[in-house]
Amino acid sequence: MKDISFLGPDGHEMSDDAREADVTTCLGMRLTGDIMNEVDERGSEVVSDTLIVLFNASRKTAPFTLLPHKVGQRWEFVLDTARPDAPPGPADENQLYPLHDRSMAVFRIQAPPTAVRPPTQAETLTAAVTAPPSLGASPAG
Image (cartoon, rainbow, N blue to C red; front, side, top):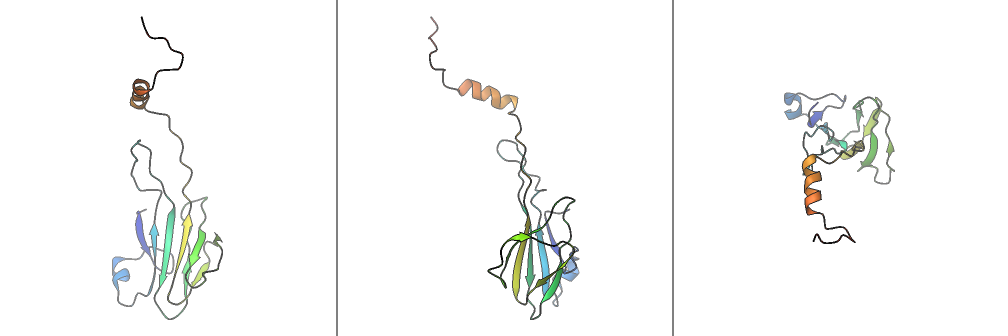
């Protein structure tokens, strides 16, 4: 799976030719946040929400299929510019989402909670060397 992919209304990845065709008026962009292959300054894996942003530039409503991302994960509706008052909530996967004419909609899968890893040996040593002396300790003499 790629970190960024473009989807057709059937929910499947589009070919470059299909995406760049002059007649393409509806597409989705999936931003996969759980495979970024990046680490933060502490060496922990960076994980974020996975999003699908749907775009419809046509004058007609376009049915868009939300295919499952991974087993056990569900898409959550976030917003639709054609329905600004619609509340966020679970989306029906494998169902056709009516993407209204000239609108944009966003769905997400929340990132799983990251596990807390134990400090590395270097971090433990650095903390021990830079830690302030304990209260009540007597100077060596």
